[in-house]
Image (cartoon, rainbow, N blue to C red):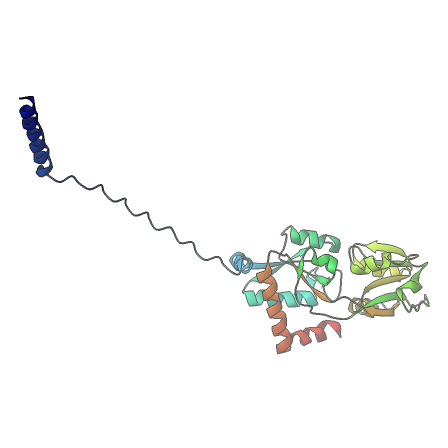
Length: 274
């Protein structure tokens, strides 16, 4: 009897389950909504420095305007010179105005790396030591350094070592000042401005001034008591730029190359160095 009742109970439970299943099919769990497509980032610009310069509408250069004919002040205290004309060409190519920041030469590299301006345009000599801190454009001037002397001195050095026992001036922070310091016996006088050094020589406060030959010739032309006593092979001259602005360095190189090809560089050489 128990077995019979169990069979009936089992049948009733089975029918109940079948009835429950036959009413409506259970809904399948909803598929998760597709994740929204990730916002596509705009591709990074290959010329971020140039983009910013164009956005700001200005190219800012740093210089020490005491190094004619590279840069100097005219009668209205406007900065003019060979470097300025080249930088004007770069700014024009960028479609922006040129802005000039004046700083003593020995502070220019620090100001450049501190982003006070975009390019150091100051007749800069290319050296391995400076390459550790900044990048350089391709050289735009290759020439000589010179020893500027007073005509009354009778000095005719054949090499730097011939100036032992003499008081020789140079600009603070220059490769010429560094070279003089390596010669034992030379008393090195450093000036913030080369114009001050040339004035000291004219007043016979120093025996000579060591600087780039084109600048020495400019001082000699302006003051007939000064003359070139010696010329020595110089380092190349180029523009210094920050290491994080390779796009601007490449652009400056393009402009320099173009100016070489179309004759504009030679016109500027004739204008400032002849």
